[in-house]
Amino acid sequence: MQQHSVAVVTGSTSGIGLGIARSLAAHGHHLVLNGLSTPLEADALCAALAQEFGIETAYSGADLSHADGVAGLIDTAQARFGRIDVLVNNAGIQFTAPVHEFPVERWDAILALNLSAAFHAIRRALPGMLERGHGRIVNIASVHGLVGSVHKAAYVAAKHGLVGLGKVVALETAGSGVTCNTVCPGWVLTPLVEKQIAERAAMEGIPYAQASGELLEEKQPSKQFVTPEQLGELVAFLASPAAAQLTGQAIAVDGAWTAR
Image (cartoon, rainbow, N blue to C red):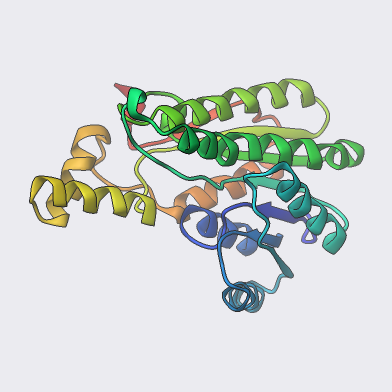
């Protein structure tokens, strides 16, 4: 892909999103970052990536839980670079509770950020991609876009919805030069998962390392965490010319979790 390709990655100031941003930068993509950062932190991150990879960077702190915020992010990217070649919908939040105890406001918040934000971003970025005859859309869902787990009603619903949204976009753009795929990671050692492990350790009165091992043992046969770097390289491949006919897929990166 040409060196001036521009990638927008939501939720990219830490964790999986930052891993994806770094891989895209390493492959020559200019970056528009988004996430929860102070202006100083965002400036420092943009400067560090620009220096390390020889690319141009921009940052938007837009609140993606509202359609106007998503529009602002996409408009910022297009104003800064004149185009969006790669859109990675990664931003997300989590909350756990039984269905009958699930707070309505948490359901609404998770659906807004984990699912609706991706729809609003795709809707806004897609016309330019279609006009240029080229684009790559990658949704970061979860293994929970393919299977369920207790106490994760909103997250599972949103991630299943993201997989379905990706299929529809792929069908509507087939043959246009635009592709849309959804990556479904298993356990990745992000701050979100570290919090779950810590809560489990506290609840069961066991060491953190033991809780971590038990978490993997239950679901992920490889007994190893997926890394943000691995996910980043997969997204970089999906953004490459080699993946031109790879579209409409839900790609599980889960240590064989869903192979059972």
